[in-house]
Each structure stands twice: as C-alpha cells, then as structure tokens.
Length: 117
Image (cartoon, rainbow, N blue to C red; front, side):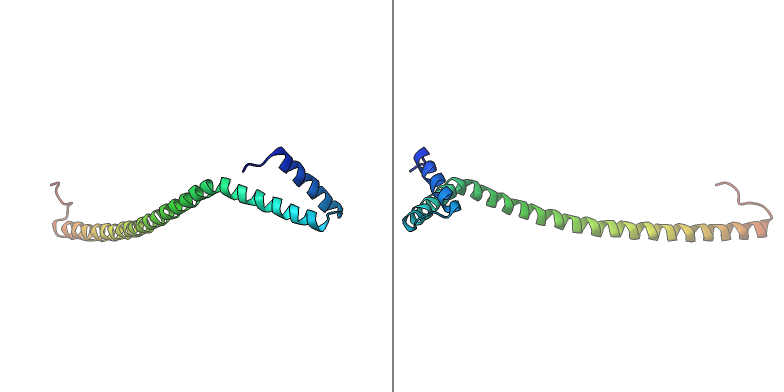
C-alpha cells in the first residue's frame, strides 16, 4: 500500500500535536503506527539500492586489497632496484679504481700512456 496525501496530512497533524505537547495516547499510537509504516516503506524502497551499495563496497574492498598487494610488490621491486643501483655504483667505483691502477702501472713501466685499443 502506497503513501497517500491523506497519510501525509495525518502524519503532519499528529507530529504538530506532538511538538505542541497536545498528543493524546491514542494519537501517540496512531503516530507510532504511521512512523513504522513510513520506515517499512522506506526500507522496502531503499533495499535494492542498499544491496547494490553493499555489493559495491564489497567489490571496492576486494579491489583495494588487490591494489594494496600490488603496491607491496612494487615497493619490493623498487627496493631491489635501489639495491641494484647501489651495487652498480660500487662496481663502477671499483672498476674506475682498478682501471686507474692499471693505467698508472703501465705509465710507470713504459713511461707513456696505454695505447688505444
């Protein structure tokens, strides 16, 4: 059964009396029944949307979990990348030191620079 203009008028009248403090006990029961009906009808109307929203929240939570997992994997890969860069820098520094030592030794022995390859 749908909500009618008469139902709304009755609700408005009873709420006005409630606010003014002149609501009788039978009117309180009528107001409670009307409010229960309003809430039941709202719940029925909103139920499909609430179900859709709950499903969407579930999907978003699953997506968030997936993305967080990817972020953790990416953070691990980034840490590995940083370690690789640090290792490469150390290797190049050692390479430069050894090359300089070889060139110094060659120059000491031959008195001239290493010939071009």
